[in-house]
Image 1 (spheres, rainbow, N blue to C red):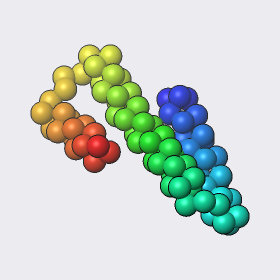
Image 2 (spheres, rainbow, N blue to C red):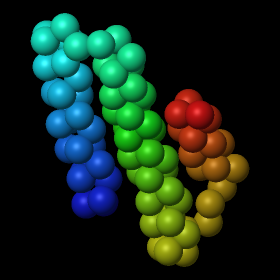
Image 3 (cartoon, rainbow, N blue to C red):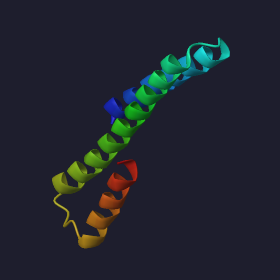
Amino acid sequence: MSAVVNRIKRAQGQLGGVLRMIEEGRDLEAVVHQLKAVSRALDRAGFALIAAELRQTVADGADVGEAELAKLEKFFLSLA
């Protein structure tokens, strides 16, 4: 879970950089490029959270029912 926290903190720093770029009137292309990077970082953090939940469920030996799989699939697809 610490890897996810680190990803989100990094994205938070990137987003602060985007705000500064906008306030400084930086080039649109550069700002959009950084926004895409922040978005990708957050998406990856979301996917990592879903994967961690699935791993934990399997590691616990829990029976992964259809409802649990459907819930994880819904989360996964919401990020895609």
